[in-house]
Image (cartoon, rainbow, N blue to C red):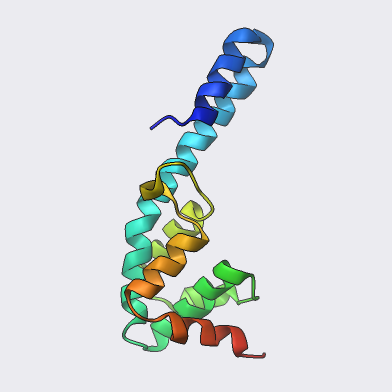
Length: 134
């Protein structure tokens, strides 16, 4: 999927060959970020499914994902206490988080996280993490 920003970059590279290398690196980065976001979406759904059980793994995920959502500090050491497959999904979400495009299905940013938590009817439980003081 190529969006209008990518098309503008390509046009600029054609018009100004001296910036073509830089533009091509930027286009590659954007393509990598887009792909990471697409891969992150199902990983995020799996992580939220883990949170529905409200086990130790779910509470660790809640702290880490809440930190991603609003910036509240969380210890990355919590990730080491997660099962390997859950840790892998968390890394996929970290890599893909922050991408937004005109294609809603590709977006992996705040709204995507909130929508996924709401889908599992965990929003009230999720935001309780914000009220905890350490």
